[in-house]
Amino acid sequence: EPHAATARKDDDKQPPKMSTPTTFWRLAGMSYMQYVNRAASCVTKALKEPAKSKALARSDFSYNASAWEAGTQGTKTNVTTFAAAGK
Image (cartoon, rainbow, N blue to C red; front, side, top):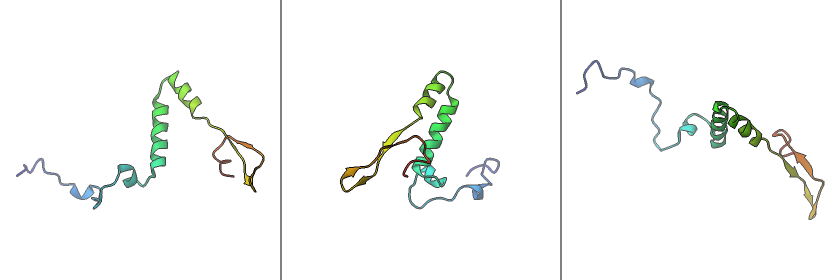
């Protein structure tokens, strides 16, 4: 029997137990991509120079997008922002 002084009195403050196993990011209400992006952002912010500058330079992206119609590729558009992606 545990000592009264060491017994936990705040068991009701513990997070609810899940009946099926799940991951901690799911319990936090995040998707896997949200978790990965947030973790990568935290790591990048914690880096010191020059590693921080190199990591930030790698985070830039771009790709060419084009619509296909009747088997023919349309005009290519350079996409460099997330807002322009998928349009």
